[in-house]
Image (cartoon, rainbow, N blue to C red):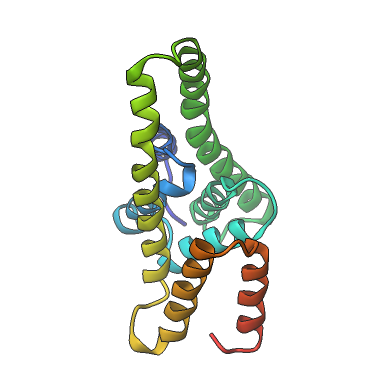
Length: 197
């Protein structure tokens, strides 16, 4: 059992709260920072648990922020420990999920509400228009960093070349054609089910 204290829960909440304010383009853009904190610094999760939580949440229908709930759930399960009863484990997992979700949603929701009201009232200002245009490359860079963390978790050696090729072809198809993304997801599922990648 991990010796989880109130200070640890507060640290989790504050870390996710600070990341919430940096989540330009969605919570998924902060995944590298979450990985560094949960896996490398605190060692509350393994690399496999981290990447599996993101993959599972992204495959499920619903908002992209669900991966934060799964990360919090995993932290809570680790906090309960292996000797905990089922009720204790589920309680701690629910607490981890709640702390992580409140941390990631509360600050950004409040800031977004206030900034959107101000931005709408001042939409004709040059600074507001410049800010909106400058955010696009930042969001793209953060999404690339997130993709890199997820890919690195599955290894980057030569035995995984089909995955790299499939990712590059998919990116090219999305960029150059009007093929709907669901067709690519379906094709990826089929290639995975057949064991090609």
